[in-house]
Image (cartoon, rainbow, N blue to C red; front, side, top):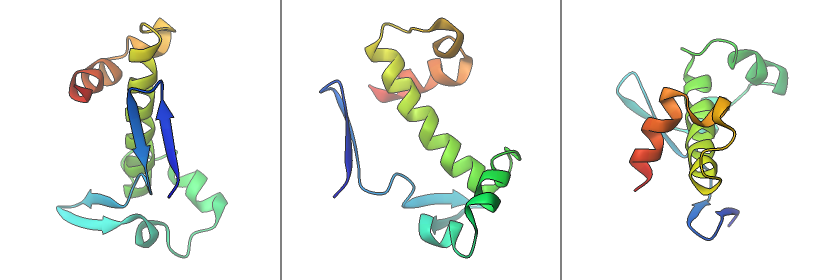
Length: 92
């Protein structure tokens, strides 16, 4: 089982986007990305309202928030954004 240990304080394990809510329905990550090429997935990230972008960027934001908490909120250019500060509060 793949995992990421963040400073011995946070652990992300397994598929980070196994369950994702899209339009009120749970979608598994493989279904969310099924049939898409790497180029299509990358292009979907340009549209922040796409289901793919919300799942991928949402998970990236949680990892970023954990890293910011571990580094004393450095760099501030990343860690001081409203999204990251809100997610830091959710980490507990």
